[in-house]
Length: 200
Image 1 (cartoon, one colour):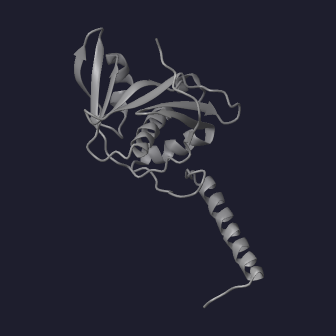
Image 2 (tube, rainbow, N blue to C red; image 1 turned 90 degrees about the vertical axis):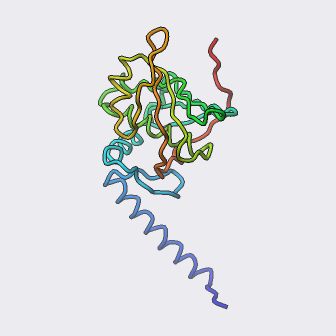
């Protein structure tokens, strides 16, 4: 049976740590987003998200609160720790087999130099939500928004194919898509305690 001494093991461990440190430096210098705890390092499929996600994750941290089939997300500035998101709520409709985007107000448009980061945020939340509930290909994505918001934002998300299904009362557009898996790491999004806020 092969055995090594404690001294040899410590040398081996030190070498591994040095290699990991060099790898982390390489990732940081080349704008590759690593999960906080190691694990998956898979990049998004699109080049756009490969560029924008690292920028978003360098500046902001995301946490979430889960209750049954509903998740509320929170975005905070990594330096000031100020919460900048207003309302980010996704829920699972098991009967319809779809992800319902109840509220998507990340507040990023108010921050300086944040062009396209709302798109990166939406992408990250959808894939995190799908992983939490182990959703497979073919689940739907559903949201309601104003036609102007759809045209200005949701229709421009090239990593999705969000289309208006119909216009309903109060000038509201029903928007739908089909979820497609993208094996991107989402482990940097951490769970926190507390209960979801219920609006009256």
